[in-house]
Length: 72
Image (cartoon, rainbow, N blue to C red):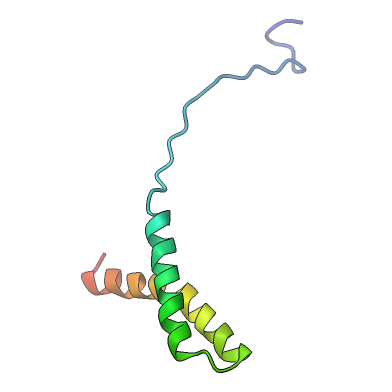
């Protein structure tokens, strides 16, 4: 087999750098919001589910409107 052969596969090692350090901040915000919303919405299963979804979506909603306000 030669280098030009289509059946030969050559792998090269390359470094991949990803910037994902804010995940812990988002998770902390989620846990804090979940505790906050569960304090007010803990009457039934449906209210607990509402609190869970509010905890998921409040931080991205806040960041979206903050960036929109800043004009970015």
